[in-house]
Image 1: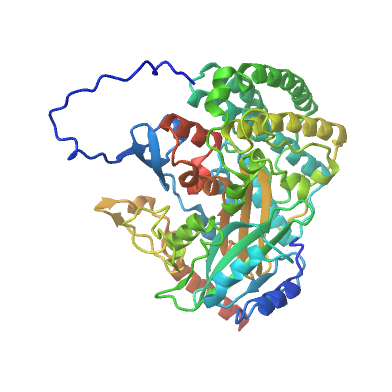
Image 2: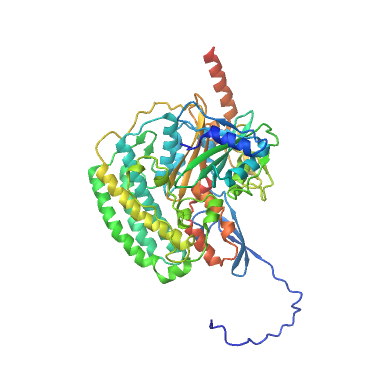
Length: 193
Length: 391
């Protein structure tokens, strides 16, 4: 699918960007997509190299997506190369272990597309992008509380004094996510025993 | 060049005020959220110097439902009605993209007839969506009647979809593993007549609007998004092709059965104006309608009776891992990034890459220096659907 040899690309990144510590993750299951994880502090340099290099360039950033794994968070950068001869894709990842104040360098200088994408990621996960020119919420209102796509998010019942989530319309599945997760875990444990 | 204003030095007015002390400042104007030219609830904060736009700052989120969060609590089949509501003018493509994502992780084989029906509905949907874009764009620029012509023909597509899926806009027709319902021969015959009529109709549109002097004056050389800008911002679809870049996933990275089909990828050539301006983006859409008709006719030749649903487990559970699948929707590439956990009936994370979101981020780049009326033309030419921008 990706048309990219991830191991080769990872070694190329390591050769060209000092301290990037790129590791390729190639899943055994051929149906799934692989990815490359790099050091959080080096992501801006890696992206600069990705766009500018002559061997395996990627000329477009498609999107930036965050994933919350409870213990840590990931930022996934989806790159693509719009080229008729060699179309390719890449998922580049950085791992953020700090949930209280997660931050990573912005790649806006290299890929201007990152402007809105990083703002969305900040809006949904509270991940701060250093050196971003205008980092504020984009989809939620500016005074919204909490980071909606984090797994531990609990929907607010009121917003600015308005009842936005009345009891009769409450989607308890949404609200009690953590409780439900704990129940699933417990059920799995009892099943294992 | 002499203009009608060049009739000699104007008489100097006598002003009692101290002109040195007078200062000019930019006027902040809100375009939207209820503005007909924004095609939905988009607010653009425009800083203007009289008629000239100095900055444009888009404010999104008026239609934000956070379907990405909702989908984490619904089983894989249940997400389809939610993705329907992303791009509500091209719901078939949203369903298709999502179904492809799950099918890729499941490893499901979709029967040939189902694939062909997906292409058929998809291309019909593309025509419908482009007709909508054509009609509303002309409406933005002050021409009312093209809207009526476009809706007449779009209605015929919607009628067919309504008969097949039971809904006019939000179909829930493409399911994981295949499609929900089969088309009858009578309906397929009607598609054939529609194609013939549409081809004639497209010529009429071309004469009526595309080459219309006023339309060309309003759109050619306006809102130029250069190829470099398009690549910088990751633009796709008619915006990228309008800038003269031949890139179409159906051709360059074929999914489904598109590799079997013979069609062209129209690009903006600068027949009027320069590549990347509003006129070229518009003409790419109109040419794509013709290409879609070509594809539909080929589907008709290939269609054979058969099953329309593949083998899918009753309760879908995906392997632990992730995929990123993108497809070519009428407005650009729609991408689904799905992360799944072992033994979970719901997606762990579903991220939607929306083309219009990307295209709106280009507005601050193209707006400075434009007249406000030209800015309206630029916003219309990227053909935004806010359901997909805000998700």
